[in-house]
Amino acid sequence: MIIGLFSFICVLALVNTDAWQREFMGLVLLVVIVMSVGLAVFQGGIYGLGEVSA
Image 1 (cartoon, one colour):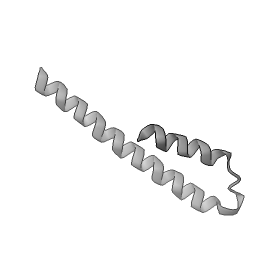
Image 2 (tube, rainbow, N blue to C red):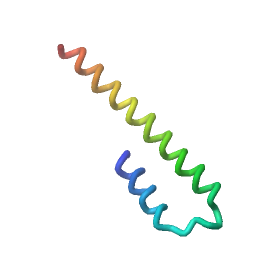
Image 3 (cartoon, helix red, strand yellow):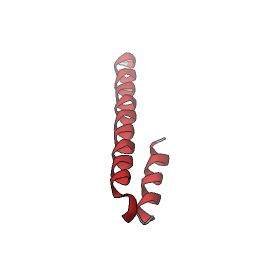
């Protein structure tokens, strides 16, 4: 999921966004928020598994 979202941002960086800069900024911020939430859940799950097995 994270690789796909990062690839999506990279593709958007190649597109001319002069006509829709505000929408582009909102879209990028939304994708970054989704990535941060996903990584936080993943990190919490890994730490939880570490505590169970210790």
